[in-house]
Structures are given as C-alpha cells and as structure tokens.
Length: 153
Image (cartoon, rainbow, N blue to C red; front, side):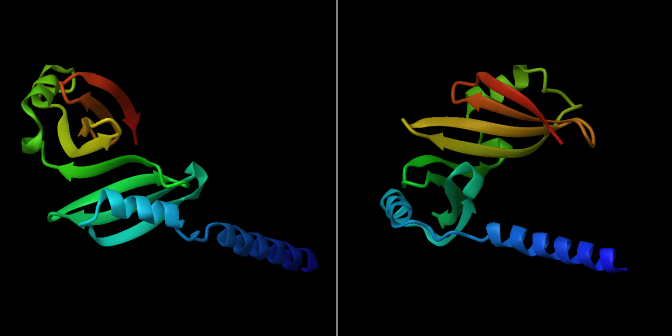
C-alpha cells in the first residue's frame, strides 16, 4: 500500500510538472509589432505558442476571411495561410490537380489552403482522401506543379 501511495504521488507530481511546462509564454513585443505592421486591419486576433518550434501563430480575421500567420521568436514573419474552396483555386492549380494521380472519383478534396510565403510566393495545400485512412497532403505551386505529396493519418 505504501508503494502504491508513493507511485501515485510521483505520477501526480510528474503530471503537474508536465502541465507547468506547457504554459503559454507571453508574446514578445517584436512579434506583435511585426504582426501589426504586416496586418494593420486584422481583427479578432488570438495567439498560440509553438514553443517547441520556436514560433508564435496568430489566428485572425481580415476582410471577412480567417487567416493564420506564423512568426519566429524575433518577430520575423515565416508564412500565412487562408482556407479557400476548391472553386477558388487558380486555373493552373486546378489543371495540375486534374492531371495528377490524385484526380478522379476515388480521391475526394477535403480541404484547400492558400499559403503565403516570403518573396510573394503563393502555394496551395490540398488535403485529398481516398478512404477512411488513406489521405494525402498535396502541395502545389501557383503554376500548378505538384511540389510534394505526403501521407497523413
């Protein structure tokens, strides 16, 4: 019985200590200043801490659209994303998807995200699903070239 109590105490301590490490850090001024300069008309801004990745992510609304923007700890913008519909894809990306092995009735488009990168680069992430467990994340360039396909669960 004594060993059981000691074990419960140790597990409880580890649980509490683990929770303390997951607490949200305050967003550095460099990050919020960089965000405000890049997105001055953003509303409904909320922040999440990606501590292990050394980044902060802002979720916000701008022009009635929902966005996310990722900044490193020093306030350097890394990328932003916006969910769009399949119909909103540019013609070259629609054509690239149609010519890929993920076209056809067996693959269903589940989600489309527009990704804005430094240097005015825009890419399109498309989640396609073939069955309950067979999903792929596809990454297309603005020109419709399939850059990457990766499996997901």
